[in-house]
Image 1: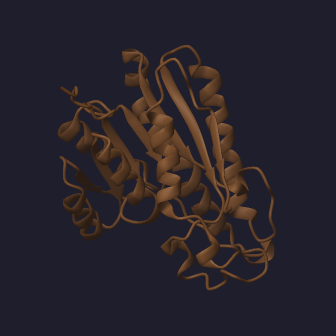
Image 2 (image 1 turned 180 degrees about the horizontal axis):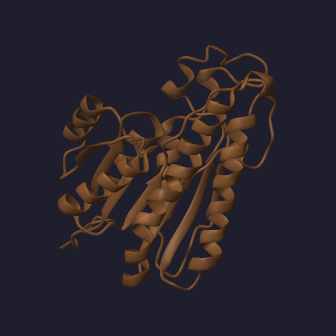
Length: 242
C-alpha cells in the first residue's frame, strides 16, 4: 500500500504581499498548493477577496496600504488573528516606473523607495522577532535583475532594488545558524500587469511580453526555496528569459 504523501508546507502560515495579481498571486497559489495557509496582502480589497476565494484552503485577504507603516501594523495584526504565527514571508509588492533621472520628481523617487524598500523592511521587522524566538521561518525577497545591474531610466527602481538586495544580504549574515532562512529571488522581465501602463515592452532594452518570464516561473522558484530541508538555505536565485 502506498504511503500518503504529506504536503510539504502543511501547517505553515505564509504572507505574500502584492498578492492580488502577477507574481504575488502566482506565489500565493503555489504556496497554498503545497499546503500552506496563505494571507494575501495588497491594497485592492475586491481583487484580494476574489483571489483568496479562488485559492481556497483557508486563504485570507488582508487589504492594506503597505507603504504606510500603520497599514503594515494593521495588516500583521489581522494576519496574527486569522493565521497565527507567520512561518513564511514573501516580500513581493513593488512599483516600476522607468524614467530618465531628470524626469523623476523627488516625490516619485521617495514613493518608489517607500514601496519597494521601506515597506519590505517594515514587514521583516514585524515578523523577525517571533521567527528568531521559534528558531524557524523563511523570508523571501523578490528582487530584480535591476538589483545588480544599473540600467538607464532606472534611477529610482534600481536604487530601491539595490537597497533591497543589501537588506537581504544583511539578513543572511545575521540569521545564519539561527534556523531562520532568507532567500533572494531576482527575476528578469516578467509578463505581469506592471507593464500595462508602460507601453514599452518590445522597445529598446525591454523584450516583447511574449518573450518574458511568466509569474508562475518566479512562483516556482519561491516554492523551491521554501521547501528545501532545514539544513539547506537557498541564498539567491536569479531567473532570466531563455
